[in-house]
Amino acid sequence: MLKAFATLSTPLIATAIIFGAACAQGAEANLSGSYKCGPDAKACQWSGSAFTITQTGKELEIKNDKGATGTGTLTSEISVSAGPPWNMLGVISGSNGVIDWSNGTVWRKQ
Image (cartoon, rainbow, N blue to C red; front, side):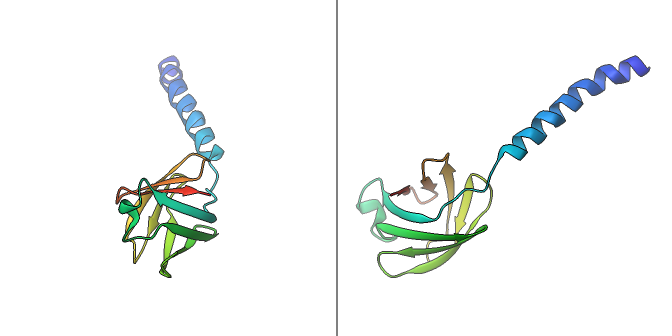
């Protein structure tokens, strides 16, 4: 019985170690900076074409070139949500400063 337990528990322990290491590697994304909206000017008409994000921890302050200001939240290492006036969810692409938004626009860090 003890041998069977050891055989079953080894893969579980290895999985837990790998999962824990993967979680520990992650760092909070730094979204502070200036962004340009794309992929084309028409896609960005209503939201603005240039944005500035100021980040404090997981909280974001977002301003656009039209004078609108809103808040956002870093919801994970790879995701962000923006409140009014944009009301959209975004996926952060690696460390290259790109946010793909649920409205089809893409913000690229300048």
